[in-house]
Amino acid sequence: MRQIVLDTETTGLSAAQGHRVIEIGCVEMVNRRLTGREFHRFLNPDRDIDEGAERVHGISRAALENEPRFPEIVDEFLEFIKDSELVIHNADFDVGFLENELKLMQHSQPEITAHAMVLDTLALAREMHPGQRNSLDALCKRYEVDASKRDVHGALIDVELLARVYLAMTGGQAALSLDEDEAIDVGVGEEILVRPRRNDLNLVVIKASKEEAAAHEAILDKIQDGGACLFRGE
Image (cartoon, rainbow, N blue to C red; front, side, top):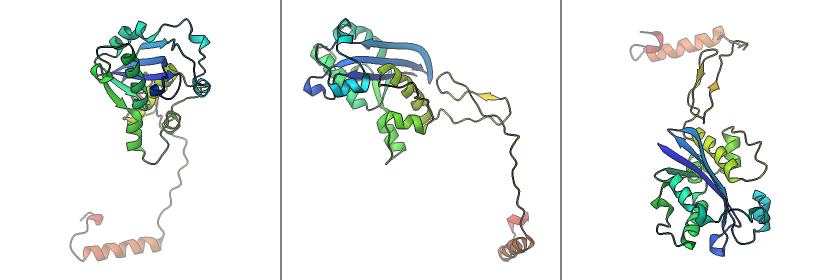
């Protein structure tokens, strides 16, 4: 199974208001493994960037003046995502912007679903955690994914975090090691998690008092009035 974790950064919040894509970041997973293959491009939007958007991603228009425009990288991008499942957080936003770029250049197949399937991890998180915050930051905290290096929102940074969150959300930490020094591959990227057996725990064992034992036996006597008592091994 080939999946592409994808994120974009844009000049603003609405493609309908003329905002454009300025960064695309993708990482590839095959059979729930990060392969190391990625697609990452900055793009010249030929327009100003909203101040609010620039505060979020830290990308200025001046920094993009010498970057390619979307039509120059579209073939490489579509080839990279071809026949995959796109894993996107809040997919409507990113897909809407990408389809807008394809329509602006009058591409023959402007619908992203003509090139790949789409899985929205925000919708998945809302099903799994109803009534809770399900932003990428919140999910990183919930699934203990280290996001300490994420000073600003960047497409490539965010997809690497989302890949690990997605794997954890969908069963990436199902296995635990029961033997000391034994490591079990739990499928979180290329990571191996180890759960050593603890031998230093001073567990307190509290035995039942005579009164409690007698009360327990009395209950079993009542049960046994109706026939064999399984709790007594009969």
